[in-house]
Length: 285
Image (cartoon, rainbow, N blue to C red):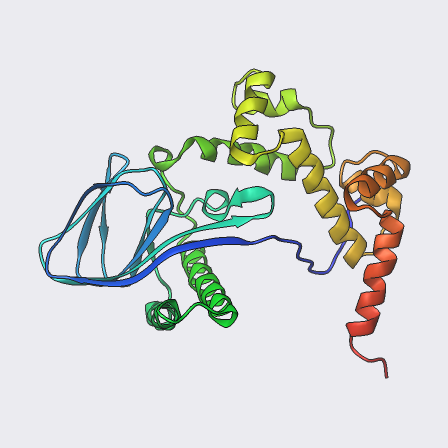
């Protein structure tokens, strides 16, 4: 039995924006460049040859080159050109790298390149303004819009995945996290998770903690509680059913686990959220 729910969002977005730059050139020759963050380079004009991970790519106007952290790349163009360049990192809840969760291809053709250019120009204007809380919000909003357009364009192309040669050590844990999400209602042990990467459980724990600053079982528990919160907010499902859907045992164990992490019982959490919805929801006629 499964539950039906309305949309709910419980994400902690983290954004590090290091550079917003419009980069014209008369001749492009970047050799063996490596950055510790993601590089997004929108080709406005010019024709670029890119080499990375043992592969060769061509990028034309209206396409975005996506360079992962710590992976060397070359870019060449014998003629003139113009790029719109971003250096950034974006993380979701549990410190998960957005572009690790979505393995975007090295070159993406934008569905609406003119819109991307327009939003970038606005972003560049805010980047050069004095630092204020409003500027921070405008930068955050602009980056999210550009990333949204990039991801939607990648999906429209059929979600061509990033080659394994461009993956880092962190990428291999994405398989583990996807397994957690897909098997949440079932019993999952650290041995199960370690076996996905053919590692000894103790060594797997150590590597996982190094990347995410938490053990794999702690992340699994947090993902389960997060799903339970969404079900409490958006459904009238019983505590027994939510416990089953989230792999949190029976209602009694679910209540203890939820209270331990959230400092309130699931029943109190649901009541509190429903009151908020009544206060801010549409007026009854």
